[in-house]
Image (cartoon, rainbow, N blue to C red):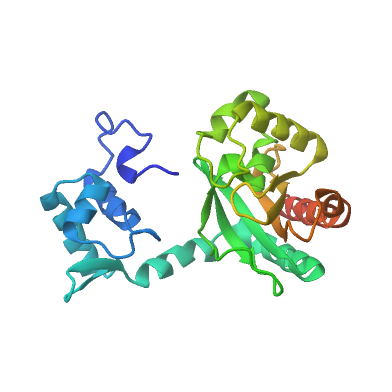
Amino acid sequence: MHKSPLDGTIDQAENALFNTSMAKGFAVLEAFTSDNRGLSLPEIAAVTKMTKSSAQRSIFTLVALGYIEKNEDTSRYRLTPKILHTGCNYLRNNMLIEVANPHLYRLNKETGETVNLAQIWGDSVIYVSRFLSKNYMLSYMTVGSILPVYCSSSGRAIISTYPQRDWSDALGETSVLHTPKTTTDKSVILGQITEAAVRGYAYTIEEFFPDDLSLAAPILGADGVAIAAVNLSLPASQWTLEDAASQIVPQLQRAAFSISASLGK
């Protein structure tokens, strides 16, 4: 859903500042996913599209720095907790998260439902803060989890505040069917974003996870363009969209407005 550091938007051949060795190191780190928790040297080389010798140099450096480790019995590599510590620096130093968390916590307590703070990253939405429901857990997702922009309520809510000419490009590729109810027709999604712009919130129903009714309201910057969204997840088997719109959306929008106002101070 996102590009490798070796596939960046910078014209690497013409920009003398681009450090290819550093990019290769990040590519190795990003090779470890929920599907690739332990990787051998040949597998890392294949995933990153690097030669074995180049991958080996990056691996050696990352092992020396403590970001990955080798299982001597299997000769497979895995990430270490140090990478989590590095990522936490983003969470600790992000003003948006600091300002939003009290409002997210309050919304979580008021509704009893899972509440997320989401930002767009490329063609994905990434959760940067998360307060879980005590009564219902739709899926195991952590801070840092990503979803495609086009089938997430947060992505649609954020895009609805962009100039309309930018909507199609912001959605990215929409062809992957994640559930039987995923909307992949871009014209239909654009129509839903138009409705979201009018309503002030977006929703999806079982488009990425089964039994998920997802609602999101944009957090606006000073220019009126969203910098993030407050997302709330409900069990679709227990809620209708109409009931959610009347009972939950006002609280959701109030939280998003309060965060927007606090950021503007």
